[in-house]
Image 1 (cartoon, rainbow over the protein chains, first blue to last red):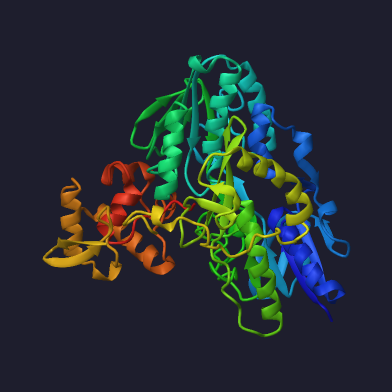
Image 2: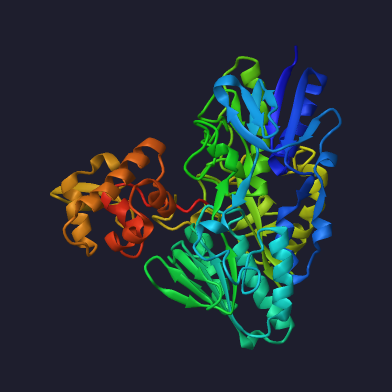
Length: 420
Length: 105
C-alpha cells in the first residue's frame, strides 16, 4: 500500500511541498492537499494594491490549478489533528488518516486581539493591507486622503514579511509626492521593536532611508488600544499617537485548529518545529513549512521556498527509516520596495544578518545587496511570474541555492557586538 | 563580548548588558541589575515574571514576547508595564539573566 501524505494548506508552502513530493514519488505515494477555499493569493502583491500598482484580480488564481496532476485537492475546514491517531478530523466529520502530515496553514491576522482595532472606524479611519479586502478598502481611503497624519503601526512580531510595513511607508511617501500633496501629509512609522529592523547593519540603512523620506519613526511602542473614532493609538504604558488614517499590521497567530490539536502549537498557535529539520516537536511523522512554523526566521515566501528542499528530503528519510538531515539554515531573501522604481535586496540566515554585497554571483551580481537600485525593483517585478511558474511548481530558482552563501557578502560591515 | 560584575561575580554580557550565559545568573544578580535599571525592591509579582522568563527561555531557547507574557505568565500586559516600565520583555529578560528577546526577522 502506498503512503498517504496529507498537506494542510494550499498556499505557498503546501503547494510547493505537494508538487515537489509528487515529482519525487510519482504514483507511489498518495498526496492530499486540504484547504478551506480555492483562492490562491500572491501575497507580495498586497503591498501594491493600496497604491493602485496592481489589482486584486491579478494576484488571485485557483489553488487547484497550481497543483500537479495526480495530487488530490480537497476543499474543507480542518477541525483538529490528533497526532496520537495519525488522523486529521475535518469539520464535516470526515477522518483523514495519514502516514506523514505536513502543516502549511500559514499565519492568520488577529486584529480582534488589539482592543478597539476592529471597533468603530475599522475600514474608515483604520485599515490594514494584509488582506485582499483590507488592501482594496485602503486603496479607496488613500485616494480620498488629501492631507493629515498617516500612521503605519506594526503592532507586534511575528508578522508576515517583516519589511512590508517599511515598504508601505516608502511607497506612501512616493505616492503622495506623485499626487503633489506630500507636504500636507505627515507619515509616522510606529513599531513595537527597538528599531526599524532588528538586525544592526540593515537597521542603519533602513533608518537612514526613512529619515531621508521624512518618515517619523516611533520605536518600542506597544499598542494596547486603538481609538478608531478619535484617531488615537494608545500604548500599554499610556503614550498616545494621533492619526487621521491608520494602517495597522495586526497581531498574527497560527491557524485556529492548531490550538485544538493537542501538543502541536505554541501559545500563538504556531507549530513547534525543529529549526533545521522542519520536523514538528509533537510527532516524528509531522512536519511544518512556511508561516505556520514557530521558527525564528522571517515569515516570507523565500523562506518557505528554501525550506522545500529540506522538507521533501526529510519526509523521504523518515519513510525510508533514515536519520533526518538538519539542512535548513534560516535562509531568507527579500526585495524591499522603496518607491521611485527602486528596491533593495537582502539575503540572510539564522547566523548571518543582511550585509552589503552582490547577489547571486559574488562580485558580479547583478543585484546589489542592501542598496537601492533600479535592478532590484525589476527583480521584484520579475519575481511575480517566477512565483507562479517556478516556485509553486516546486523547482529551484536558477543560480540560487537553498542554503545561504557568504560568497560576495561584505562580512566586515558587521561591527563588533552586532553579530547575532 | 564584554564583562560586567554583578553580586561580586564577573559575567560575560553583550553590548546592552544582557548576560551571555544564563547559567552564570544568580538571584542576587537580579536585585543588582534591577537597581541599576531604576527598579526598586523586587516584589513577588516581579519574581513571577522573572521566573517565567527564565523557565521559558531554558525550555524553548527563546525569550517570550510581551504578548506571550501577557497571555501565559499570569501577569496582564498593563501590569507588566507598571512592574517593568518601558520595555517589560526586554527589562525582565535582562534581570532574569537571559539573552535579549529578538524580534523574529
